[in-house]
Length: 168
Image (tube, rainbow, N blue to C red; front, side, top):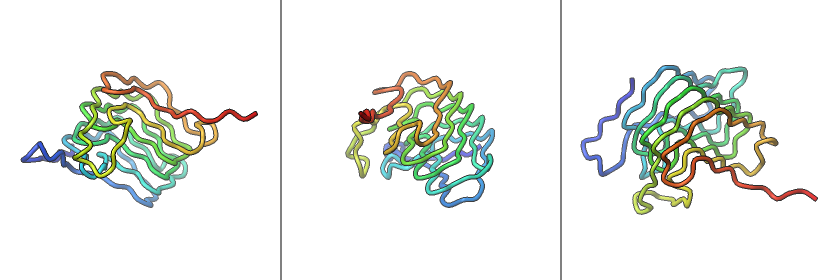
């Protein structure tokens, strides 16, 4: 159990686990409470520039609640995120950006609210959404699978997958 205690909850500042250029990341059965940092835009778990091979990167059966984004996966590949619960998050439940070969399966994401744009360095018009897929390429091109997830009570959208131009 990882709990970040914040004496002044108005700061929206909690602990963050960052995986950058790691060879292996395995989180199973972990509870993250009061995590994330709304002011910096960092999530409870931030996987960045990390490329896993053969199930070396997964987060499973864990729970997240806190001050910022639940899980961020940026410029990474091979991450499996399954059977987790994210609740009472701010900004996004999950944010996937410029990643490939990602599997997001059988998660429950509830109660995502937007944050005050003044408390964060960059503003997003999608703040308050459950799962945001923000890749330059399509889901099919990146072999990213978002399946069997339950998303509810989000201030804005449940799922955001930007459309792509149709080819002629």
